[in-house]
Structures are given as structure tokens and as C-alpha cells.
Image (cartoon, rainbow over all chains, first blue to last red; front, side):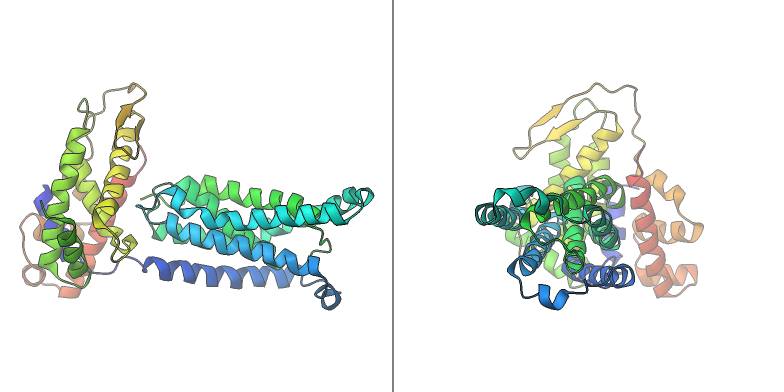
Length: 212
Length: 177
């Protein structure tokens, strides 16, 4: 078949191949949140003292960070699923969450006596954090990989990493409602490692799943 | 060569269902990609026309990734670049095509790779029904209604077969070696 013949075929094929890109991402996010909620409420549920905890600034700040991560990664992931967006133009909002965490850590270190730092960093159950953020975030990651598959990412591995960040943002938002450790020192350490797990999985799987 | 506004206008019309505008758009884009790939076909390991056809197929299947009112040419070239890199990788060479579109080949290919990327051969991978429909429309240039009459099936069946046939062709192209 020569190119003219191919163009004949293409121009007559008007059946819609795929969901429009923006719609696909919002649909993926909605499904991701529902799935994460299901996993979270079936396995952990919110911590028993959540009503009191909600009054403390550290508790609320955890959600500011996780939602900032999710929002920044959502913007970046959507941009990266178009082939013509340069990587550096997709990334700026990703800086929000790390900057917030760094700011909070500085505030914590300056207001809390150094004798308390180690205990706050180690926390009471980091293993729970390291297992459940990836667990709650895994179905979301699946949804976001499907959204990447709908798109045409020029840099699938990077897009996969950002999908991992987004999944971590969603997973961590739910997990934070259960997590007994509120110190920014804990969040900066263990939430970051848990995020890295999802980022790694995203980076490895996206080039296969989102091949085009 | 059409200017940028023309391309955007054609693509918008195409997305709204104008088949003629879409054909015109694809022909213009094919010319652009052909000159881009032709300059970079290098030692002949990569067939420029294969890159053109793969890029057209990808442009078609991923047309929903174009942001309306965004410039068309960068979007087209990003897809062309992606397919060119794929073609080189299959040929056993690594290349980098950076933002200034300077080509560098890095590794020597290990074996002689004949160009196995002809869409003609990809037709072999279709079901008989798909092959009949795709062949009638592409090679023979028939319309949807003509094809439906000739094969004694409904127009919807023709459209479905065409669509699935094109997806199957794209999948075969995209299979990793």
C-alpha cells in the first residue's frame, strides 16, 4: 500500500478512537479516588481520634502537602501525555509539594527541641506508611497508566514517574487520615520513600503500557 | 507548502467530520514529514516513506491529543520525531533527535536489517473481512457506500472493519522487535 492509499483509508475512518484527552484524565482521577477510597475504608479507615486531630495544624498540613502533590502531578501528567509538550513546561507545579514540605520541616526543626527530633522522624509505625500508601495508590496508578495509554507521551518513562507521583498524592491523602504520625519530619521521610516506590513502578511500566 | 494557519484550519475541519479537509491535511503533513525523515534516513537503514506512513497512522489514531488552537506543526513534528526514533531503534541504532533536530547516531547496528515495515505486509495481519474493506478503500479508492455495496454488508460494518483494520495495522507496526 502506498501513502496515497493509506491517506484514503485514514480520511474515511471517522469512528472515534479514544476519549478526548482532558476528559480521559478527569475520568481516571475520579475512578482513582473511588478505588483508593474503597481500599482505604476496607483496610484501614480513619484514625479513631480524627476529630481531635483535625484541630491540630500538623494534621491538616499533611493534607495540604498530599493534595499539592496530587494537583501538581495531575497538571504535569496531563501535559506530558501530549507529544508536543516539552518536559520542562510540564513540571513547574510539581515543585509545590516539596517546597511545602521543606518549609514545614524548617519550621518544625526551629520550634521543637532537638531531643525530640529523632522520635518524631522515626514515628510510631513507618512500616504501615510504607506499605499502605503504595497499596492504596496502586489502583490509582493503574488508572493513570491507562490515561497515559490514551495519550501520546513523547517521554513515557518520565510520564510514568509523574503518574506515580499522582498516585502517591491520592494514596497519601487517604492514608494521612489514618496515619498517627503528624510531624513534618515523619512525612518528609516516610511519605517520600512510599512515593518513590510508586514513582519507580510508574517509570518501569509506563513505557510498555503507553507504547504508541 | 501550506502555512500554519491553513493546517490548523484544515485539522479543525477534519476533526469536525470534513473528510476532504482531512485528506488535504494528511497530504500536506505527509510532505512535511517526508522531507524531515528524508534528511535523516542516514545510511538507508531507515526507509523514509515507512516513517511517513507510521507517522500518519499515529497522527490519525492520536488526533485527540492535539490541543485545539495549539500550533499544529510542533505537534506533527513531535509525532514524526517519535516514529523516526522508533524506526532507528528497530534498526539496531540509537539516535538522539534534540530540540535543534540535529541527528547523531551512536551505536553501530549489529545486523543488516531489511526494511520490514511496509504497510503492505501489515495488511497480511488483518482478518479477511478487514483486509477486503481496507484494501477497497485505500488501494482501490472506493467510498464507504461503494464498498458496502460491493461486499454486501452495511455501511456501519464497513466503518467498523476499516477502523479495526487500521488499529491492527498500527499495532503491528508498533510491536517491539
